[in-house]
Amino acid sequence: MSSPSQKVPISVLIPAKNEEANLPACLESVSRADEVFVVDSQSEDRSCEISESYGAKVVQFHFNGGWPKKKNWSLDNLPFSHEWVLIVDCDERITPELWDEIDEVIRQNQCDGYYLNRRVFFLGKWIRHGGKYPDWNLRLFKHKLGRYENLHTEDVPNTGDNEVHEHVVLPSQAGYLKNDMLHIDFRDIYHWLARHNRYSNWEARVYYNLLLGKGESGTIGANLFGDSVQRKRFLKKIWVRLPFKPFLRFLLFYVFRLGFLDGRAGYIYGRLLSQYEYHIGVKLYELQKFGGHLNKQQTSEAKARQSVS
Image 1 (cartoon, one colour):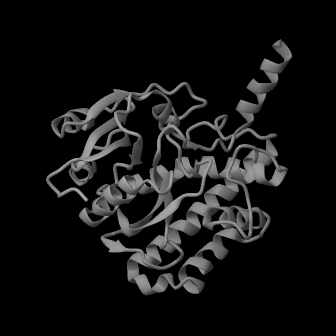
Image 2: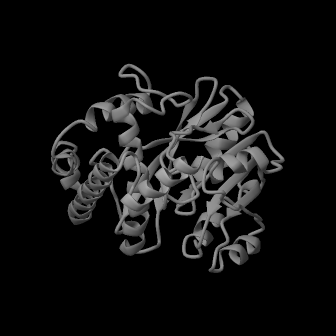
């Protein structure tokens, strides 16, 4: 294992857009990496300046409105100097203990990828209950082997240019790291709500595709007896057909999964998740009402294009 003063032979990928509040702490936490790329989407704040001041290589991503999105584009196009890539969002932090473990496992080279467990902090408190922990994400892998799945949501407007809840697909079994990654967003509730408004567009399309049995090829798939991601996918296929989902989501988070143990932050988080589920349901209804489009105008435009063609 290398000492903390030595660089770990790994490339870090950080997708960013207007993240000047979060980037300093994020970049400081990945300073042990030998190479850091910040893939920016024409930020209007000091994101690029801050990234360069920490020695990161800044690359601009111009979204074409479809596929690929930012992370897959980066995996396909960036000139990584190392075999291993670690993907870190701007509101995430890699602890010294996790760096020691990463350094050890990539030198052992026993797996082609590793899941990292996230501790999500909200209003200054670790949301330990409610099903938010453990929160496994495949973020460390050999960059030539792993790509994010396409859940066929690219035709939905206002979802952003970055992969949201898609997962990395690897051709081989991945391992699990013991030390946690931290998720700490320094921005306020306004930004949480704005982000989840975009996410609900994406989630509504995923629900819509599940109800129609579409968009499962090339994805991780659903399997009750598989890993944690496959089990979630299996349960989600049942979940989308249940009534009263906003109320059920609060009940699951706050009562059955003990979210109340996280105090007032847990209660607020549970209420926001319930509201988020309601927004997904409303947008799903809109998709069903207008034949897979998020509004009537879009439906009319689609019909006009079909008549011209």
